[in-house]
Amino acid sequence: MNELLNRFDVWLAANLLDYYASLQPGVTDAELDAFETKLGHPLTDDFRALYKWHNGSLESGFPPLPWYYWLPLQESLRYQSSGTVDGFETNTWLEWHPDWLLIDSDGSGSHLLYDPVGVWGGQAGQLIQWVHADANYVKHSGIRAWIAVLVETLEAAIWNDEAELEADIFPWMNQELMARLDPGYPKDPIETD
Figure 1: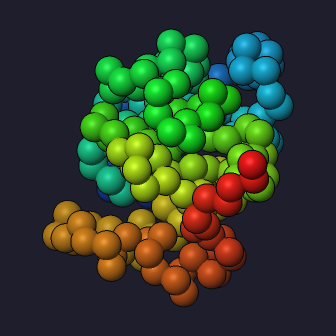
Figure 2 (figure 1 turned 30 degrees about the vertical axis):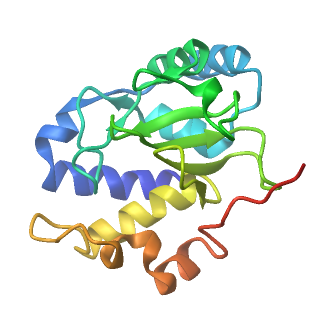
């Protein structure tokens, strides 16, 4: 994980200096322990590594999606405990799990959620893509896979200012790339009731 974060750091510093400057300093192990206690579930080592690297950003623009915002820990926990996201009550949304942790959002209904319990028959630490409360799925096996996809696509210049944001250029829609970096993902939700 640290090698991936080092590569990500180098790419951001060389290509997105304004965004890079908005990244907050990483948190300590003690802060992560306290956060884990509040969350009520263990954090994966990769989640810990990500937030020790940086504690989210102060502005939107989390690569490669310019409108996404990587949430700092306390803001993420605030959303979880408030039961609202983007002004909507999450407890009224079909299938929104109360233990999910919002880590990345576009501010208009699309969110990347850290799942500490492994809903839909999955594994703890998987990442759920929540799309306007009606098209939701397990996007990645975990934080490491998410960062690997970001780093590989950024380094390969799959994402750039000229790229049109159409479904066929999204990395997770590229079956060959996903099979190599996160085999078996994305997945449709699996009902376990």
